[in-house]
Each structure stands twice: as structure tokens, then as C-alpha cells.
Length: 142
Image 1 (cartoon, one colour):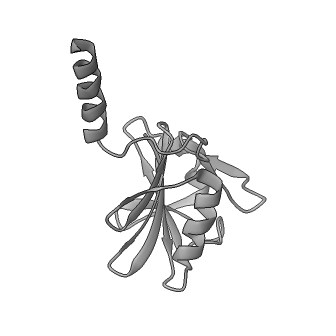
Image 2 (tube, one colour; image 1 turned 30 degrees about the horizontal axis):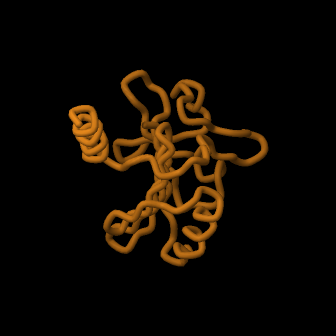
């Protein structure tokens, strides 16, 4: 009985720490950019991306000629200067429902937390959300 209670406490504490793993499929950890530039992976060193980004508004963004599907893509780096997160900003005309349906088909059933649709494989998190009428998607290292 004591082991069972301990196991339950462990499960509850893991679930309380944030979004739980909800997909058995591995989430993509990269974005494909225009042919000349190839692929950008989470974990890439900031120095390897200097030629593809610009600094503005206190952050780093992919240049507009690098990736054409979003209005802009912010790049977030950790203290080791590794790419930790992509933040995609989409136009109001972006079809959020259709995108969620497509990702659900690929990644499985998401967790819905407020206005956030979240897939988490324990290593990577992909989240779609709307804030202030603006649509976003985030691809993050965990």
C-alpha cells in the first residue's frame, strides 16, 4: 500500500509541474527555410545563425527572405547561446482551425489549456495560441 501511495504522489507531482507528455510521436525540432539556407534546428548555436537573422525590438528574428509562411519568426536563445525556441507570428487570415487539425493528424491529440493547444513529447513542445487577436505558434526545447 505504501508503494502505491508513493507512486500516486509521484504521478501527481509530475503532472503539477507543467504540461505533461501527451504524444508518443516525436515532435519535429526544426524548420525548413528557403532552399539556399536549408534547415534550422533547435539547439543550433547563435553564431551559426547570424547571417539569417536581424536584431530588433530587443530580440532576434529571422530575416523575411528566409522563411515565407509566417509574418515573422522570433528566435529565443538560452544562456549557452543555443536556439531554444521559435516563436511564429501569423496574420489574422491564418486558418488556425485547419492548422490545428493538420498537426493533430500528425502529432496526435493535443492538450488544451485555455486558449493554448499543446503537444509535448517530453523533449520538445509545440504550442498554438492566440493573444490579443494575433495568432502564434511556438516550438520549444524542454
